[in-house]
Image 1 (cartoon, helix red, strand yellow):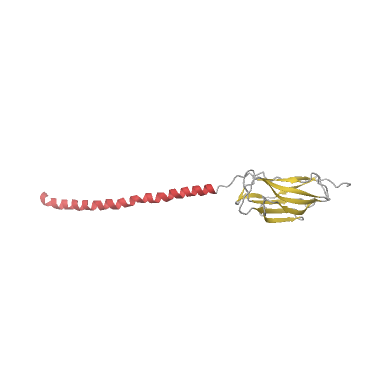
Image 2 (image 1 turned 45 degrees about the vertical axis):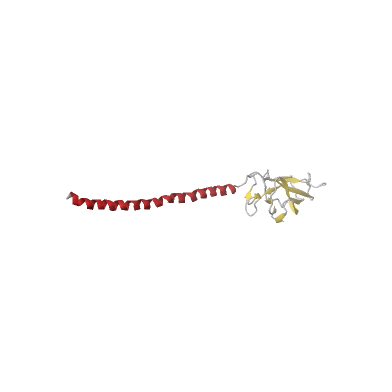
Length: 204
């Protein structure tokens, strides 16, 4: 009985052994898949890191400051305030100056553009509302250092006080700022109010 059963048993083993290599081959092929899928993930991570480095915002180092051309401002007389920007070593390409003033004490006569930011984007004033808005930029170039942005010719009115001020406005659409490729580089305390001392006209 055992001898007759042996050939059938061996045949079964042979068939099973013949099928075994096919199973191993079919399982070996998917083993290469992790290599294919991991590589794009690594490259994508490296690309994202490079893009993040390129798009890193510049430092906020710029500041506005204003200067009077004349030390004494008398009622009824015209005077000039120069608006300058110090970039703090940072390159810039666009500036926007939005100022508020007391229309009972001051009125704007003229806005004069500076020579460096030669592409004027906005230049307007409203003596009734007490507003000045000026914006300019550089096309295809940048500038750093201390630069005169504009000059404001004003007139001190008869209804004087001891002093008045030009105050920078923040909040869209009248947003004071200094920019590099769309990024703001104006530091937090870079636009302080400017006090103008006023005196009565002689003989009053």
